[in-house]
Amino acid sequence: MTFVAAPARLSSVSATFEADFSARLHWSADTDAAIEQRVADILADVERRGDAAVLEYTARFDGLQAPTLAALELTQDELKAAFDAIPAEQRQALQAAAARVRSYHEAQKQACGQSWSYRDEDGSLLGQKVTPLDRVGIYVPGGKAAYPSSVLMNAIPAHVAGVGEIIMVVPTPRGEKNPLVLAAAYVAGVTRAFTIGGAQAVAALAYGTHTVPQVDKITGPGNAYVASAKKRVFGTVGIDMIAGPSEILVLADGSTPPDWVAMDLFSQAEHDELAQSILLCPDAAYIAAVQQAIDRLLPTMPRAEIIAKSLTGRGALIHTRSMEEACAISNRIAPEHLEISSREPHRWEPLLRHAGAIFLGPYTSESLGDYCAGPNHVLPTSGTARFSSPLGVYDFQKRSSLIEVSEQGAQVLGRIASVLAHGEGLQAHARAAEMRLK
Image 1 (cartoon, rainbow, N blue to C red):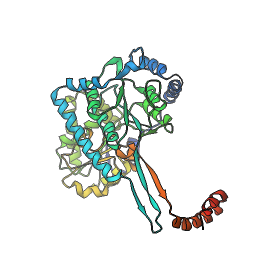
Image 2: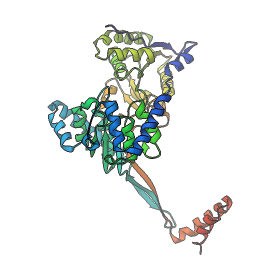
Image 3: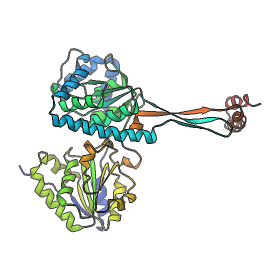
Image 4: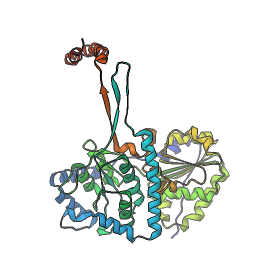
Protein backbone atom coordinates (compact mmCIF):
# COMPACT_ATOMS: atom_id res chain seq x y z
CA MET A 1 0.00 0.00 0.00
CA THR A 2 1.31 3.46 -0.93
CA PHE A 3 1.06 6.35 1.49
CA VAL A 4 1.55 10.00 0.59
CA ALA A 5 2.84 12.59 3.09
CA ALA A 6 1.92 16.10 2.02
CA PRO A 7 2.83 18.61 4.74
CA ALA A 8 1.48 22.09 4.08
CA ARG A 9 3.84 24.28 2.05
CA LEU A 10 3.69 27.78 3.53
CA SER A 11 5.63 30.98 2.92
CA SER A 12 5.96 33.84 5.39
CA VAL A 13 5.72 36.34 2.51
CA SER A 14 2.30 35.05 1.46
CA ALA A 15 -0.68 37.32 2.11
CA THR A 16 -2.52 34.40 3.69
CA PHE A 17 0.40 33.20 5.83
CA GLU A 18 -1.00 34.25 9.21
CA ALA A 19 -4.32 32.51 8.62
CA ASP A 20 -2.72 29.41 7.09
CA PHE A 21 -0.12 29.24 9.86
CA SER A 22 -2.69 29.59 12.65
CA ALA A 23 -4.90 26.91 11.14
CA ARG A 24 -2.01 24.47 10.87
CA LEU A 25 -0.83 25.19 14.40
CA HIS A 26 -4.20 24.88 16.10
CA TRP A 27 -4.81 21.89 18.32
CA SER A 28 -7.52 21.76 20.94
CA ALA A 29 -6.64 20.30 24.32
CA ASP A 30 -10.33 20.06 25.21
CA THR A 31 -11.27 16.53 26.09
CA ASP A 32 -14.40 14.99 24.64
CA ALA A 33 -17.34 15.46 27.02
CA ALA A 34 -18.10 11.73 26.98
CA ILE A 35 -14.52 10.96 28.03
CA GLU A 36 -14.71 13.54 30.81
CA GLN A 37 -17.89 11.99 32.19
CA ARG A 38 -16.54 8.45 31.93
CA VAL A 39 -13.36 9.47 33.73
CA ALA A 40 -15.33 11.22 36.46
CA ASP A 41 -17.36 8.04 37.00
CA ILE A 42 -14.22 5.86 37.15
CA LEU A 43 -12.46 8.16 39.62
CA ALA A 44 -15.48 8.28 41.91
CA ASP A 45 -15.87 4.50 41.74
CA VAL A 46 -12.22 3.82 42.57
CA GLU A 47 -12.30 6.32 45.42
CA ARG A 48 -15.38 4.54 46.78
CA ARG A 49 -14.61 0.85 46.12
CA GLY A 50 -10.80 0.82 45.86
CA ASP A 51 -9.25 -2.48 44.79
CA ALA A 52 -12.51 -3.97 43.55
CA ALA A 53 -13.16 -1.11 41.15
CA VAL A 54 -9.57 -1.14 39.81
CA LEU A 55 -9.83 -4.90 39.19
CA GLU A 56 -13.15 -4.51 37.39
CA TYR A 57 -11.89 -1.76 35.05
CA THR A 58 -8.61 -3.57 34.39
CA ALA A 59 -10.56 -6.64 33.31
CA ARG A 60 -12.91 -4.55 31.17
CA PHE A 61 -10.39 -2.27 29.43
CA ASP A 62 -7.20 -4.37 29.39
CA GLY A 63 -8.73 -7.84 29.25
CA LEU A 64 -6.60 -8.75 32.25
CA GLN A 65 -8.28 -10.99 34.83
CA ALA A 66 -6.88 -11.36 38.34
CA PRO A 67 -8.31 -12.63 41.66
CA THR A 68 -6.89 -9.69 43.63
CA LEU A 69 -5.15 -6.41 42.86
CA ALA A 70 -2.10 -7.71 44.72
CA ALA A 71 -1.77 -10.33 41.98
CA LEU A 72 -1.13 -7.48 39.52
CA GLU A 73 1.87 -6.19 41.43
CA LEU A 74 5.25 -6.96 39.89
CA THR A 75 7.84 -8.14 42.39
CA GLN A 76 11.45 -6.95 42.39
CA ASP A 77 12.44 -10.50 41.43
CA GLU A 78 10.23 -10.26 38.33
CA LEU A 79 11.81 -6.95 37.36
CA LYS A 80 15.31 -8.35 37.79
CA ALA A 81 14.35 -11.52 35.90
CA ALA A 82 13.14 -9.35 32.99
CA PHE A 83 16.43 -7.45 33.04
CA ASP A 84 18.45 -10.68 33.08
CA ALA A 85 16.38 -12.14 30.24
CA ILE A 86 16.65 -9.34 27.68
CA PRO A 87 19.54 -9.41 25.16
CA ALA A 88 22.92 -8.19 26.42
CA GLU A 89 22.82 -5.31 23.92
CA GLN A 90 19.57 -4.05 25.45
CA ARG A 91 20.89 -4.45 29.00
CA GLN A 92 23.96 -2.40 28.13
CA ALA A 93 21.91 0.28 26.36
CA LEU A 94 19.53 0.60 29.32
CA GLN A 95 22.39 0.90 31.79
CA ALA A 96 24.27 3.43 29.64
CA ALA A 97 21.15 5.57 29.14
CA ALA A 98 20.29 5.37 32.84
CA ALA A 99 23.82 6.43 33.81
CA ARG A 100 23.64 9.50 31.56
CA VAL A 101 20.13 10.44 32.77
CA ARG A 102 21.26 10.02 36.39
CA SER A 103 24.44 12.07 35.83
CA TYR A 104 22.47 14.94 34.28
CA HIS A 105 19.91 15.01 37.08
CA GLU A 106 22.60 14.79 39.77
CA ALA A 107 24.11 17.95 38.25
CA GLN A 108 20.66 19.52 38.16
CA LYS A 109 20.15 18.75 41.84
CA GLN A 110 23.45 20.40 42.76
CA ALA A 111 22.54 23.50 40.77
CA CYS A 112 19.05 24.17 42.06
CA GLY A 113 17.98 21.68 44.68
CA GLN A 114 19.93 22.67 47.78
CA SER A 115 18.80 24.18 51.06
CA TRP A 116 20.31 27.54 52.00
CA SER A 117 20.09 30.20 54.68
CA TYR A 118 21.74 33.41 55.87
CA ARG A 119 21.57 35.72 58.88
CA ASP A 120 20.79 39.40 58.48
CA GLU A 121 22.34 42.28 60.39
CA ASP A 122 19.97 41.71 63.34
CA GLY A 123 20.90 38.04 63.65
CA SER A 124 17.66 36.69 62.20
CA LEU A 125 17.97 33.56 60.07
CA LEU A 126 16.23 33.45 56.71
CA GLY A 127 16.44 30.64 54.20
CA GLN A 128 14.96 27.72 52.36
CA LYS A 129 14.74 24.05 53.21
CA VAL A 130 14.48 21.64 50.26
CA THR A 131 12.98 18.21 50.94
CA PRO A 132 11.96 15.39 48.61
CA LEU A 133 8.41 14.13 48.25
CA ASP A 134 7.67 11.00 50.27
CA ARG A 135 6.03 8.94 47.52
CA VAL A 136 5.37 9.52 43.82
CA GLY A 137 3.51 7.60 41.13
CA ILE A 138 4.82 7.30 37.59
CA TYR A 139 2.46 6.41 34.74
CA VAL A 140 4.10 4.51 31.89
CA PRO A 141 2.08 4.15 28.65
CA GLY A 142 1.59 0.56 27.55
CA GLY A 143 -1.09 0.47 24.88
CA LYS A 144 -0.01 1.10 21.27
CA ALA A 145 3.67 0.93 22.16
CA ALA A 146 6.01 0.30 25.10
CA TYR A 147 8.21 3.05 26.47
CA PRO A 148 11.09 1.90 28.68
CA SER A 149 12.66 5.33 28.14
CA SER A 150 9.69 6.89 29.97
CA VAL A 151 10.48 4.71 32.98
CA LEU A 152 14.03 6.07 33.10
CA MET A 153 13.00 9.69 32.57
CA ASN A 154 10.36 9.64 35.32
CA ALA A 155 11.92 7.36 37.93
CA ILE A 156 15.57 8.46 37.85
CA PRO A 157 15.07 12.18 38.66
CA ALA A 158 12.67 11.13 41.45
CA HIS A 159 15.35 8.79 42.76
CA VAL A 160 18.02 11.50 42.52
CA ALA A 161 15.74 13.94 44.33
CA GLY A 162 15.54 11.49 47.25
CA VAL A 163 11.93 10.37 46.92
CA GLY A 164 11.28 7.55 49.40
CA GLU A 165 8.99 5.38 47.25
CA ILE A 166 8.42 5.30 43.48
CA ILE A 167 5.22 3.50 42.47
CA MET A 168 4.94 2.58 38.78
CA VAL A 169 1.72 1.73 36.98
CA VAL A 170 1.76 0.36 33.44
CA PRO A 171 -1.13 -1.17 31.50
CA THR A 172 -0.47 -4.66 30.11
CA PRO A 173 -3.36 -5.37 27.73
CA ARG A 174 -4.30 -9.06 27.81
CA GLY A 175 -1.47 -9.59 30.27
CA GLU A 176 1.33 -8.92 27.76
CA LYS A 177 4.24 -7.57 29.79
CA ASN A 178 6.99 -5.81 27.90
CA PRO A 179 10.30 -7.13 29.27
CA LEU A 180 12.21 -3.96 28.34
CA VAL A 181 9.80 -1.83 30.40
CA LEU A 182 10.18 -4.17 33.38
CA ALA A 183 13.95 -4.19 32.97
CA ALA A 184 13.97 -0.39 32.87
CA ALA A 185 12.01 -0.32 36.13
CA TYR A 186 14.69 -2.53 37.68
CA VAL A 187 17.53 -0.33 36.39
CA ALA A 188 15.80 2.90 37.47
CA GLY A 189 15.08 1.73 41.01
CA VAL A 190 11.27 1.60 40.96
CA THR A 191 10.02 0.59 44.42
CA ARG A 192 6.72 -1.07 43.47
CA ALA A 193 5.05 -1.71 40.11
CA PHE A 194 1.47 -2.61 39.16
CA THR A 195 0.14 -3.82 35.82
CA ILE A 196 -2.81 -1.43 35.75
CA GLY A 197 -3.46 1.59 33.55
CA GLY A 198 -5.99 4.17 32.44
CA ALA A 199 -8.06 6.48 34.60
CA GLN A 200 -8.44 3.70 37.18
CA ALA A 201 -4.66 3.59 37.74
CA VAL A 202 -4.52 7.37 38.16
CA ALA A 203 -7.38 7.14 40.67
CA ALA A 204 -5.67 4.35 42.61
CA LEU A 205 -2.49 6.42 42.90
CA ALA A 206 -4.34 9.61 43.82
CA TYR A 207 -6.73 8.18 46.42
CA GLY A 208 -4.96 5.00 47.48
CA THR A 209 -6.63 1.61 47.76
CA HIS A 210 -6.16 -1.40 50.03
CA THR A 211 -3.27 -2.51 47.78
CA VAL A 212 -2.02 0.59 45.94
CA PRO A 213 -0.55 3.27 48.23
CA GLN A 214 -1.61 6.88 47.87
CA VAL A 215 1.11 9.06 46.35
CA ASP A 216 1.93 12.75 46.64
CA LYS A 217 2.41 13.40 42.92
CA ILE A 218 1.74 11.65 39.60
CA THR A 219 4.00 12.09 36.57
CA GLY A 220 4.12 10.57 33.11
CA PRO A 221 2.07 10.79 29.90
CA GLY A 222 -0.95 8.78 28.80
CA ASN A 223 -3.99 8.85 26.54
CA ALA A 224 -6.99 11.19 26.75
CA TYR A 225 -8.45 9.24 29.70
CA VAL A 226 -5.20 9.49 31.63
CA ALA A 227 -4.84 13.20 30.87
CA SER A 228 -8.41 13.88 31.97
CA ALA A 229 -7.93 11.86 35.15
CA LYS A 230 -4.73 13.73 36.03
CA LYS A 231 -6.51 17.06 35.61
CA ARG A 232 -9.31 15.92 37.90
CA VAL A 233 -7.13 14.59 40.72
CA PHE A 234 -4.87 17.66 40.77
CA GLY A 235 -5.26 19.20 44.20
CA THR A 236 -5.57 15.83 45.87
CA VAL A 237 -2.10 15.09 44.47
CA GLY A 238 0.37 17.06 42.38
CA ILE A 239 0.84 16.35 38.67
CA ASP A 240 3.65 17.17 36.28
CA MET A 241 1.74 18.46 33.25
CA ILE A 242 -1.04 17.63 30.81
CA ALA A 243 0.76 16.33 27.73
CA GLY A 244 -0.56 16.94 24.24
CA PRO A 245 0.59 15.35 20.98
CA SER A 246 4.36 15.22 20.42
CA GLU A 247 6.00 18.01 18.42
CA ILE A 248 9.24 18.75 16.58
CA LEU A 249 10.31 21.98 14.92
CA VAL A 250 13.46 22.05 12.80
CA LEU A 251 15.21 25.33 12.07
CA ALA A 252 17.41 24.63 9.04
CA ASP A 253 19.81 26.82 7.10
CA GLY A 254 20.08 24.32 4.23
CA SER A 255 23.43 22.83 5.22
CA THR A 256 22.19 19.53 6.71
CA PRO A 257 21.57 16.54 4.40
CA PRO A 258 17.84 16.66 3.53
CA ASP A 259 17.44 12.97 4.39
CA TRP A 260 18.51 13.69 7.97
CA VAL A 261 15.89 16.41 8.38
CA ALA A 262 13.18 14.31 6.74
CA MET A 263 13.88 11.47 9.17
CA ASP A 264 13.88 13.88 12.11
CA LEU A 265 10.40 15.03 11.03
CA PHE A 266 9.37 11.37 10.81
CA SER A 267 10.66 10.72 14.33
CA GLN A 268 7.80 12.68 15.85
CA ALA A 269 5.21 12.00 13.17
CA GLU A 270 5.46 8.26 13.84
CA HIS A 271 4.14 8.70 17.40
CA ASP A 272 0.55 9.28 16.29
CA GLU A 273 -1.59 11.03 13.70
CA LEU A 274 -1.90 14.19 15.84
CA ALA A 275 1.85 14.65 16.28
CA GLN A 276 3.24 17.78 14.63
CA SER A 277 6.43 18.14 12.56
CA ILE A 278 7.41 21.56 11.18
CA LEU A 279 10.40 22.76 9.16
CA LEU A 280 11.35 26.45 9.04
CA CYS A 281 13.96 27.40 6.44
CA PRO A 282 14.87 30.45 4.31
CA ASP A 283 16.06 28.26 1.39
CA ALA A 284 13.17 27.29 -0.93
CA ALA A 285 15.30 24.81 -2.90
CA TYR A 286 16.26 23.05 0.33
CA ILE A 287 12.60 22.76 1.38
CA ALA A 288 11.87 21.11 -1.97
CA ALA A 289 14.78 18.70 -1.36
CA VAL A 290 13.36 17.77 2.05
CA GLN A 291 9.98 17.07 0.47
CA GLN A 292 11.70 14.82 -2.09
CA ALA A 293 13.46 13.00 0.77
CA ILE A 294 10.10 12.56 2.51
CA ASP A 295 8.62 11.03 -0.63
CA ARG A 296 11.60 8.71 -1.09
CA LEU A 297 12.00 7.56 2.52
CA LEU A 298 8.36 7.21 3.57
CA PRO A 299 7.79 3.81 1.87
CA THR A 300 10.70 2.37 3.89
CA MET A 301 9.09 3.18 7.25
CA PRO A 302 7.13 0.49 9.16
CA ARG A 303 4.81 3.20 10.55
CA ALA A 304 4.37 4.89 7.15
CA GLU A 305 0.60 5.23 7.47
CA ILE A 306 0.81 7.09 10.79
CA ILE A 307 3.64 9.31 9.51
CA ALA A 308 1.71 10.17 6.34
CA LYS A 309 -1.43 11.12 8.27
CA SER A 310 0.54 13.20 10.77
CA LEU A 311 2.51 15.13 8.14
CA THR A 312 -0.50 15.67 5.91
CA GLY A 313 -2.84 16.68 8.73
CA ARG A 314 -0.54 18.74 10.96
CA GLY A 315 2.90 19.01 9.33
CA ALA A 316 4.28 22.09 7.57
CA LEU A 317 7.31 23.10 5.51
CA ILE A 318 7.58 26.87 5.92
CA HIS A 319 9.71 29.11 3.74
CA THR A 320 10.88 32.15 5.73
CA ARG A 321 12.56 35.40 4.75
CA SER A 322 15.56 34.68 6.96
CA MET A 323 16.83 32.57 9.83
CA GLU A 324 16.02 35.49 12.13
CA GLU A 325 12.38 35.34 11.06
CA ALA A 326 12.44 31.57 11.47
CA CYS A 327 13.55 32.05 15.09
CA ALA A 328 10.75 34.56 15.68
CA ILE A 329 8.15 32.13 14.30
CA SER A 330 9.63 29.34 16.44
CA ASN A 331 9.14 31.49 19.54
CA ARG A 332 5.47 31.87 18.64
CA ILE A 333 5.10 28.10 18.36
CA ALA A 334 7.09 27.29 21.56
CA PRO A 335 7.71 23.70 20.41
CA GLU A 336 8.33 20.66 22.56
CA HIS A 337 11.49 19.67 20.60
CA LEU A 338 13.47 22.33 18.71
CA GLU A 339 16.36 21.36 16.44
CA ILE A 340 18.76 24.01 15.14
CA SER A 341 20.07 22.15 12.11
CA SER A 342 22.65 24.73 11.12
CA ARG A 343 26.37 25.27 10.63
CA GLU A 344 26.20 27.91 13.37
CA PRO A 345 23.66 26.69 15.94
CA HIS A 346 25.12 28.88 18.71
CA ARG A 347 24.50 31.94 16.54
CA TRP A 348 20.77 31.31 16.58
CA GLU A 349 20.28 29.81 20.04
CA PRO A 350 20.28 33.21 21.85
CA LEU A 351 17.29 34.27 19.71
CA LEU A 352 15.21 31.28 20.85
CA ARG A 353 13.26 31.89 24.05
CA HIS A 354 10.55 29.22 24.14
CA ALA A 355 11.16 25.48 23.71
CA GLY A 356 10.99 22.35 25.82
CA ALA A 357 14.43 21.20 24.66
CA ILE A 358 16.86 22.74 22.17
CA PHE A 359 19.03 20.43 20.06
CA LEU A 360 22.10 22.20 18.73
CA GLY A 361 23.74 21.27 15.43
CA PRO A 362 23.16 18.74 12.65
CA TYR A 363 24.42 15.73 14.62
CA THR A 364 22.02 16.32 17.52
CA SER A 365 18.94 14.40 16.44
CA GLU A 366 15.94 14.73 18.72
CA SER A 367 15.87 10.94 19.14
CA LEU A 368 19.15 11.07 21.08
CA GLY A 369 17.40 13.27 23.64
CA ASP A 370 14.48 10.87 23.78
CA TYR A 371 16.66 7.97 24.87
CA CYS A 372 20.10 8.61 26.20
CA ALA A 373 21.60 12.13 26.00
CA GLY A 374 20.77 12.78 29.67
CA PRO A 375 18.30 15.70 29.88
CA ASN A 376 14.71 14.71 30.51
CA HIS A 377 12.44 13.86 27.58
CA VAL A 378 9.22 14.70 29.46
CA LEU A 379 8.69 18.15 27.94
CA PRO A 380 5.96 20.80 27.73
CA THR A 381 3.77 20.56 24.61
CA SER A 382 1.10 22.62 22.84
CA GLY A 383 2.87 25.93 23.37
CA THR A 384 3.16 25.51 27.14
CA ALA A 385 6.96 25.86 26.87
CA ARG A 386 6.14 29.57 27.07
CA PHE A 387 5.63 29.12 30.82
CA SER A 388 6.68 25.61 31.86
CA SER A 389 9.77 23.42 31.91
CA PRO A 390 10.99 19.87 31.34
CA LEU A 391 10.45 17.32 34.08
CA GLY A 392 13.34 17.41 36.51
CA VAL A 393 14.62 16.89 40.02
CA TYR A 394 12.77 20.04 41.09
CA ASP A 395 9.44 18.36 40.26
CA PHE A 396 10.10 15.80 42.98
CA GLN A 397 11.16 18.26 45.66
CA LYS A 398 9.37 20.92 47.62
CA ARG A 399 10.65 24.00 49.37
CA SER A 400 9.89 25.25 52.87
CA SER A 401 10.83 28.76 53.93
CA LEU A 402 13.00 29.06 57.06
CA ILE A 403 12.49 32.07 59.37
CA GLU A 404 14.12 32.55 62.75
CA VAL A 405 13.75 36.11 64.05
CA SER A 406 16.11 37.26 66.79
CA GLU A 407 14.99 39.42 69.72
CA GLN A 408 16.68 42.40 68.11
CA GLY A 409 15.11 41.61 64.74
CA ALA A 410 11.65 41.40 66.30
CA GLN A 411 11.95 45.05 67.40
CA VAL A 412 12.42 46.13 63.79
CA LEU A 413 10.10 43.70 62.01
CA GLY A 414 7.41 43.93 64.69
CA ARG A 415 6.86 47.63 64.14
CA ILE A 416 6.66 47.18 60.35
CA ALA A 417 4.22 44.27 60.69
CA SER A 418 2.09 46.18 63.21
CA VAL A 419 1.61 49.14 60.87
CA LEU A 420 0.70 46.92 57.89
CA ALA A 421 -1.60 44.64 59.92
CA HIS A 422 -3.56 47.59 61.34
CA GLY A 423 -3.82 48.92 57.79
CA GLU A 424 -5.42 45.63 56.74
CA GLY A 425 -7.75 45.63 59.73
CA LEU A 426 -6.20 42.48 61.21
CA GLN A 427 -5.69 43.47 64.84
CA ALA A 428 -4.67 40.02 66.11
CA HIS A 429 -1.83 39.99 63.60
CA ALA A 430 -0.72 43.38 64.84
CA ARG A 431 -1.00 42.45 68.52
CA ALA A 432 0.99 39.24 68.00
CA ALA A 433 3.87 41.33 66.62
CA GLU A 434 3.49 44.08 69.22
CA MET A 435 3.70 41.64 72.14
CA ARG A 436 7.31 40.93 71.20
CA LEU A 437 8.28 44.64 71.31
CA LYS A 438 10.20 45.90 74.33
